[in-house]
Length: 527
Ligand code: HEM
Image (cartoon, rainbow, N blue to C red; front, side, top):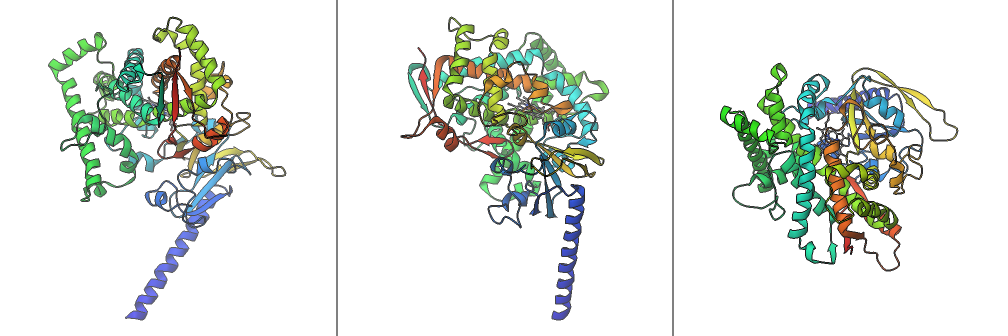
């Protein structure tokens, strides 16, 4: 009967409203009343990503990239803000304070990686990046030694080889002036080449395309598609990939191609005869990629050994953790060097002194190229590829909250068990308390600083980046060679200053990693 239906609907509606009111009250308690956003959906849920503040400021969340877009006003009241969804998603706080961030990421806090992140990112298998502490310890013991000195030497050698391959194939070698419409494309391909060779053990040459289209998919193409679609794949459930759409089945094809490639590789390296050859190869230095080393370490790991799925899970995660992060921060650094000519000149003078005869840099030169390193660290500060570090409170935890508004006192807050906490690396890096004149590109601020303690770009504490040295070797090699050969310039519009160019061009978007917008640069050959 219609009236019964109407009653039932009214009852259901009322139950929904009451349950949402309860959810928001619990959420407000979980974040101890810290001011911030009250919205329908958490910004990072699949629907939250679609329905954001561009549609309505109250009923939808502030968007996936609000940490960048609103960075100048977000922390006006306290150095912590909250986000409490009333339809779906956990309550969360975002922090821009160094001390609280160190407390969150340090060894002793009752904090872990969030369970929903762990769940959605286990595409190929458990791995060191997303697992929670108990499982993570076993993975870290096997994966950390894979980043050996031999692997880092391979990164250096491959970076030089790839740079030369790139210069030749792009036709730069014979030119005095090159207009690069989007430097991000170059740094992406460069970082892809290094991760493919040094993490997957799959050599790449610059004239290969990582994204050819054809009936069957090459492994390179599969890696290329997987790298681009990884966030989607992590966000949406498995059944979505069986829908009859070409673009979707391409994603599925990429993942199954990669899966069978990695399974074959593990089997190859595990069989007895191949194992012998492989150990030999390890001795003469040709199997120093991270994947080979994880398999090798896992074989020696006894009870702690990783199974095939875990080995694959870890290797696959390298693609995600090490490709976009390095590519984005390199692109941003090149763009900033184009704006700040005087800083570029300081780095160039050092490169000239170290590589006096125009020779190629060796690993031993790394320590003498500190001005180049400082440029990269400053680029990474202004464009932190890992823009937020997500954690979940495993017990109630007391945090210090500092006021940024005259007349409002500092306070403490109790973050409830289960609430999410995000270290907002953009917030930390643009906080004038941490970095005076935070928007200025000043590489000299990194002189004599301790990277582990003073730079949040690679994280902090036990879960900090395992690939830091890998990324730094790759980046310093690329930048030293680029600046040795070319003066990086930016093309200004008539009457535009370089600072105005920076405001217009050098913005970004928080996706899975924080990505700078496409950056055009001109390269003018040094004598
Ligand atoms: C500029 C480049 C890079 C940046 C900015 C970066 C940043 C980070 C950050 C911030 C974390 C900590 C995440 C957290 O605390 O939740 C992390 C973890 C990690 N990174 Fe990187 N990373 C970079 C390059 C790489 C590379 C090249 C690799 C490997 C080839 C790599 C592998 C890892 C791994 C395995 C972890 C997980 C460590 C653990 O939880 O024990 N990263 N990275």
